[in-house]
Image (spheres, rainbow, N blue to C red):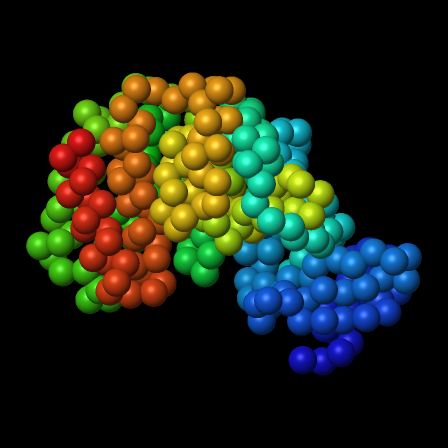
Length: 288
């Protein structure tokens, strides 16, 4: 990497401060840069300008709700995003309860429609390394099937990761979505990629959210993704959430339905193991 276009140079350009140190973060595209005013910022390299823009717009949109903590974005360009670094602590029951309440408030802040991107964000965005189109829809069951399930299902079949008979199980879920979806809900303001790795337990005793794939969606989708990969203190998070914005009857039965989207994304990105989990979730959704 050319130092003139490296993380330290990006931090200087986007913060207006001089960089005095540079360390590689936990992932290859992350760097921690120390500035001459004593701050340490997170510098993230993106491979696609749309991905950088989508993340920056998503963080701003989440922050505007004033409900959950997200790192301050100091600037971005076609390749780099510079934000505050969050010192990490340990999961705490009180923080989990407050996070649940805050997540409920974030969702209640709402979105104009299902699939709407954050203001200024691109229609053609990403969830992790997978493309994600933010095309809007008025009714959640149809939108969820057409924009969040079937595109990844078709790619998984085309790639040979899912067999046709397995895909048919997921297609049956899509056909029955109007009856499986539960009571109608207004579009919620979603983080959109709310797995445990994007939930930081801060040294300040609060929970911080990073790396969103933000869009308008169904609030149960964020909660189902939290459960998918084992969020610490999830029982307390859900207790705080239900206290602030009670969930509709039957929401626990619908968890596998909402997990189809992230499982199919993982199937596309990581292969056969997630394909099997996708089919298991589809069968559970049909069993209701």
